[in-house]
Image (cartoon, rainbow, N blue to C red; front, side):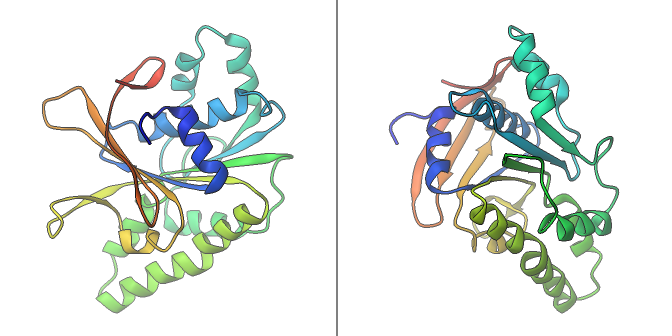
Amino acid sequence: MDTFDIASLLNLLKECRIVSISGESGTGKTTLALQLVASALTQKGGSENQALWVQASEQFPKKRLQVLFKNSHDSYKALLKRIFVHPGTNPFLDYQTQSIFFANLISVILPFNTKYIVIDNISHYLRFAASCCSDVKQKMALLDAFFSSQLFPLIMRCLREEIVLVLIHEVSFDPALGKNQPFFNKLYSRINSVNVSLSKPFGSKVKLMELASRDELISKGVRYMIKNKGISII
């Protein structure tokens, strides 16, 4: 891919309906997800579609959405009606509450014509629960159960119903690779997804984006900044 913009990523999702966004705090993970979903819902042919935004551990960025559409108040109001936020007030309180929701999400009736599901931040409580495990076997059992009973069935539902699933992750530093990786990266490597990695070089306002699929690098070293209008490629 020689150039990149939000439209480019939307085109990628027509082929692979799962996108994984990871990066340090302040790299624009939530902004990118919001910009992606808002663009999809407002583009030609998307006016009847709706989205479900799951506040797993992060509050829905309502003010950011308002800034993105400050020149189009009607679009902003329309998007608020078409992006269903759950839980309705605050994010989940713990891993158990999140797990119950994901278990139900596999079969619950979604809002009519839901074409996008965003989960922000899917790994926060999982990471904390794993840190509380007393031994390695218990930790691995927890992570495997999360993948097999919560995440994988949700992915299969999204593929069956042609829903784009956007997963936002925390990262941790991997000393072996010398770089940040999504929490329990090996789990998510099982998923055929478009992986968007965001990073911020020390002391620079310019940030870097890398896109890859499970099998190949799509684009590396895409330079961007976070502005009022959202992610801006430079």
